[in-house]
Length: 317
Length: 278
Ligand SMILES: Nc1ncnc2c1ncn2[C@@H]1O[C@H](COP(=O)(O)OP(=O)(O)O)[C@@H](O)[C@H]1O
Ligand SMILES: [Mg+2]
Image (cartoon, rainbow over all chains, first blue to last red; front, top):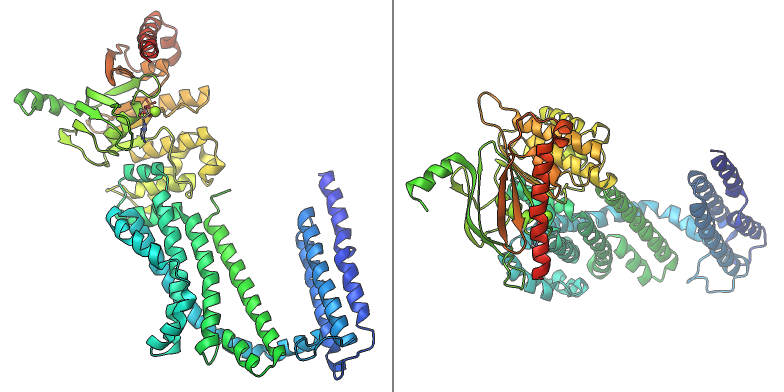
């Protein structure tokens, strides 16, 4: 008890005084240096706002993990790198103007554009997520049952296994031009590509999980006289969930890659299109804004998926 | 095989095994695990099987459960040839296979919901809790198997089999991972459930694998010894003690010890025999 209190006290101090906080101060002090790049004074406030925002998030995070020394340490390490990067970036752009302006916009200006472009981001996100969700869900609801049934039925397996061995390794990105030509609308072709991309990893992982499930699990289910459907969906599926989840995660990442690639090739809306569109105009600030928004979306999606996985696999210590 | 005499016999026995021969298909050797094994267990009987490890006790139990195809011979339950598991047979496996993604209680509820005459959800939950309580696990009902010790998992598996209330109980070393106190309690509970006869019906038939001869004698009507070399049954010993049996009194009696020494000698003779053969 007393040990815990002792530890808590030390960590409490660490939240305010640490490597991260020192670099925050350094970066903040740098903002008082004169601005070399022209027309950038008006965006100073955005950059300072970003620094304060990040430090605030960092402190909240530190407070949440205050009992875990290692998490505290790694949080400080990460924020140190972030502030260090911002400091240098700010120095080379806003303060000294040493690198090309149109390729490396000042951080304050990026933040300003990030805020300005938020409505455009939402519109494009809606368009992209319609494709992503449709294609991905289609893959999930077909690949899992098919993987289960093919793994369970020996004869089906003998037919499906050589087919999937030929088709699964084809990088789905090569389908994009053909799919765009075949399907009447871009929407349909990109849904198809996302579907194909997510389908194989989920199918292959479900299949191998089913083939390798422990015999005693099957036996104890059979001894309970379960029906075929119960065996597949209430015994095998939860039993091989770790394997299925890894397919689902790989499938999600592939979906993102494919979605953005497809949008860059043939779309008139969406996050990938947004980047391609402004790259064509050489407006690299907006390209950077697009990249930041896409990575935020990926981070949110993968961490949500991590939550789902943790819940589904809560029985595994 | 279908002459009137054996037909009569079949009606009397709950489990009838004739000339059973079995070999694992994935095994490369031609060695049979079971060879020409014959056994008949009357309805309501309690039969224990003992024998050296690897002599095929678990294999025999799994075959009666209908989990594997026999190579030749017959296994009849109520006179009917079996080729798959059935609801009339409840199994407790040697490795107490619970589903790791279900809590202790959900494992039992799931088993109950597979029964033909299933009741309401509430009733199944009540029943699951009742049997977990009987095996002393009321406080662990919402734990997952990986959070339980081996002995606790074993007790959940036993509670599941008891709750299912099937006519035939096939139990493979069900009490092996339990401490002495728990084992005694569960032996008593098993006998209690076995002897319970509802509205004139004959009680459960139990096929019980164990490596503990004392336990076999305490519980059974008959103790069967299986042999590693013969791949079959080498002795079938009736246990004459009256029921209900009193644990301590019986274990300390002379008759009990004589019988146990007798069985131990038979078993050791067989195991030594086997070692010489090897
Ligand atoms: N799944 C299996 N595949 C192949 N051989 C097996 C399998 N299970 C058991 N055996 C073999 O069958 C024999 C009997 O095993 P088992 O029935 O488990 O014995 P016991 O339960 O009496 O210890 C052993 O020689 C064992 O190696
Ligand atoms: Mg065994």
